[in-house]
Image 1 (cartoon, rainbow, N blue to C red):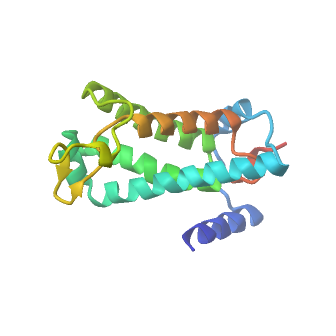
Image 2 (cartoon, rainbow, N blue to C red):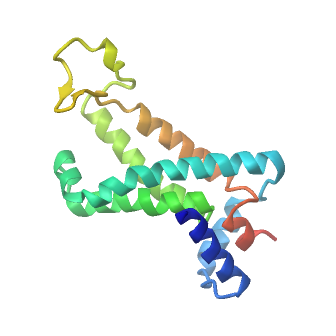
Length: 182
């Protein structure tokens, strides 16, 4: 429902020419990054890939924003840095879903995921954690029982996905295509 509302508001703004003028540097950057906006099956696949990745980041960002201090304390990081990371995931996720300023949204979230990747690697976490059923009893249990031990595979895969979105572009079925296609 929320996504439909966002699309309706943006469509209204575009149709009524009330959309804020973006700075020329942003328009130039997006024109430089995207030679074209693929349509057809490629455009549909880019929409699916971009929107599903964006939805994952909205779902990851929301609990971090609503529990910011708890998350910052668990990471032993300043609240402000955690806020920037959570905001990039939450707001950037919505931008990816809509295909709005896609390269900038991808870059913002990529920064957060690259830092998460660095943190997990610096703590000595393995690339792929053992599945919970492979963990001997009592070795990794939280208050709710066995969970996934730390690893950096998710952060790594998110980085790969964001690089792919940034390079491939949002596709024709995006707000970027409405604003920047020639």
